[in-house]
Length: 241
Length: 241
DNA sequence: CGGAATTTTGAAACCTTTCAAATTGGGTGG
DNA sequence: CCACCCAATTTGAAAGGTTTCAAAATTCCG
Image 1 (cartoon, each protein chain N blue to C red):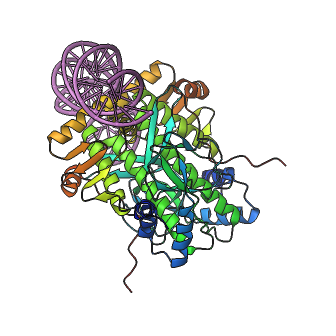
Image 2: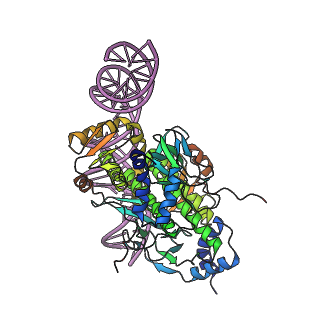
Image 3: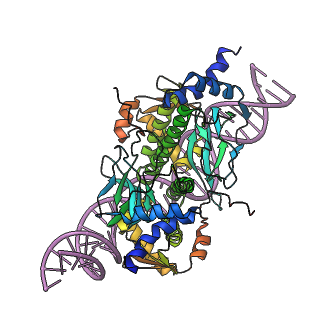
């Protein structure tokens, strides 16, 4: 019998997938079984390598990961961050190659999720996960292309806040963000120096607190309004008969 | 009987899809039949609206389109460009909503492509199309996040060159680019003024010619090398035998 | 041919980067 | 529990790339 603590750590991934679409008991138990087999991977290790074959999808159970691309001259760009409940390497292409490297940002736990072939509800969940992932990529493009430094930071934090809230990893308006300002800079197309200055300004503006890897948004709704952010919607709610 | 000219216009889309994966004669004729029914849509019209339901996928047969997002304050960001052979609104999410607006950049012809359910090869083609589309989004993120203005322009033009070459719309190193510098700016996260200056510089550097909507790359290979570009690969080549 | 859209030019302002160096924070060993 | 070290954050000043605001020149199209 697992402890309450380890249960909680694993719950996030299940919570997230179940939030996407209603899951049958059989599906949930298949997922639980998979999650129970999760393996640890150290921070900085690669979970997937750009240009290499994608073996099987992995479910991120605990910790943070990220998709990254490295340029020949050393510049790097984080494409998006992955949090518990996110699935890595979902692809229906035969002999698919990874189009980006996925690295563990923190120590993580990853599991091999069940095949969706016999679980229609899980297939839907995977579809939705992919669609949301794509929507987040579009949001990232807009961030980099049309938002200034302050807006980029606020917008990304809001996205993370929304995602972590969904899987129960935010408490109130606070959540852990295990990212250095340098990683943040490489995600936001800025330098770490400038990220630092802009985070300080956000603090001065009273928009947030950020200490020891934990962020508290003063007023997420007001902040979203301030920068004109709207959360992604990929599916019409089911008709209520 | 169609004229050679109109044939050529329609061939691009078929050529592109067939380039993704080998297509059976039955699939090709289903596609041809669909393409023959293509409907015209005027430039600037929306083919898909952000937040609205996706009815059915559309195959872009002729002309250019683009995915766009508009910010509340009027700023806009082009997410990617669509050329003949690209499929719009591929999604396996039930009751899917569009996550971006798709507009016709030029006058276009769009068709309703065949369902993939009975044509396994077409299903593979669609998968590959989606995977390539995603790879292009990742490339766009890197462009905006880590390339400077000159590199962004060169990189995007190279991507378009590669794509148009694939479907037979490039002749030699030249191809039509029906984009104003303002649209280009909104795709590259720049201002049209700066795009203008940087295009002029690229001309002075001898990297390209650009007159009347037609671009000629002096030396695509050298240019790709110069900016460290590598084309996306989403699939391992099939084993020989 | 005329008018609108697009491209081009100039100068100044602005946001972000660069380059160092100082400071703080967290983790480890004594 | 303190000393020490490395990573991460913070600060300053100057340089740089990009934007802004106008206005002129050019091209496109009916």
